[in-house]
Length: 95
Length: 489
Image (cartoon, rainbow over all chains, first blue to last red; front, side, top):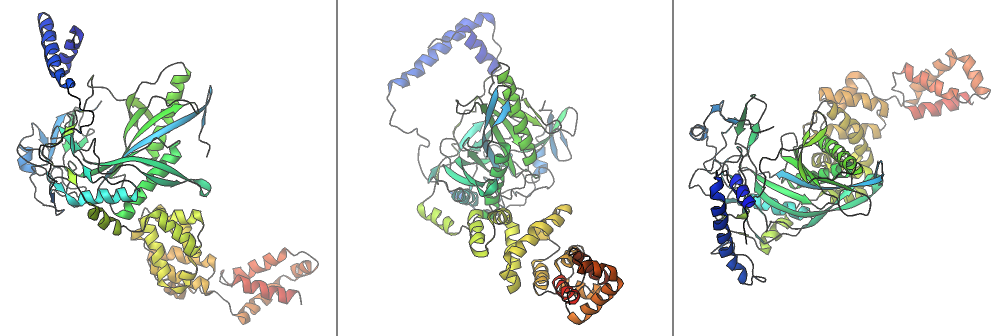
């Protein structure tokens, strides 16, 4: 599959990676090669095969419903770039 | 019900499907031991698992699995013995993991259906596509600061059930009935408290429009509505918006919409990313949930009577009308209250229709006016039952009962005490009533003559006068009888 210039630019934008104009052709070729290589997988017929979800399928184990009433807020808020009255404070994320 | 609405180019049909997010009632979170209590100090119910500290691993809360399966049984849905947790990846400040643990290809509950009760005793079946389990996100407060958002992770990781409906709904009224029914079922089961104000029940609404019998139109999804009133407004506005665009020759763009409750309008959410891809994959930290027949059987044996069954029983056993039965069974606490009143005395047991009327017309009114939940009703089932007994025994009239009811509501007193204190007991003694009747007739000799000459309507006047003299306490049927005997002599 051929990845064209525009697709490469779009992928770069989504990935927030800055590329120069003179790099576009090279990256397009590399990406095309990667896709072609992975596409070898399509040669295998998997029509009747369920996707593998786990390497070892053992049922999940469960825990009970008793709450642990421990307040970790001081530890956790240590990681906050900014905090006020026990809230994490972040730049406004709504329009 | 004809649900078509008029546009400039003819009739339109609205097609609606819902995703309801219902918080599971449990003590601890879906994958951690943090408490699920509402309204505590911010970030004090956040374990190291909820905060997504490196190396922390989720462990499934079995009780939440049971709650989901129970809800599935309540929705007459297929329970999947094999289900898988997946990661849904997105980046947002209220999601510490950077992904939500959810279920994608293998949900715990498959397709089911519920009945909604339409007006005039009709009902309609609404398909349930699936129910899956997922983590709730934290809560963001956007209105505390002009440039900042405050984040509280207490809610983060609480178990949610996402209940997806088929696009079977055709009007905002049907949507309201559907939500009320799902809510009612979950409250009967004790799997979700259904409290929309506190956000334990929220809905995303998919709306599209089409000309009747044509292909489905492009849909828009209105996100995160938490009141039935807003949901109805949003559907009304959104369907009108779409019809206008199509009728003016435009096309509907598939979009995620926000509802603004101040203006009652919807608008598209700004798309931050060009490509939206949640990159779902099975969560490597969690093994598949495998449950067996016995697990399901134990839960189905523990199922309580559900709203539809209760309604049918009330119709059969208590001869309630379909309307009354569905009203009184729609809320679990009300049904419990009703049954308690019946059990207290044989009078109420023999007159369920009367009990039902007092609850629906009087008690509902007072509770609503004072914003009190029925399980905290100042009138206890005991006292209501006593009062109804007094009516049936002829000790008080229905009219006086209304006054006593009000007094009971505000003073929490026993109705027999109120009657004694205020001397409200009905006068049924013929001797004293005859005396009062004689007084009335003597005072109004002219009217008596008019009555005798054929003005039958005046009987009501005489009854009224007797009532005045007795402060409304005279037994009206005895007064009627005695009056007729006396005058027609």
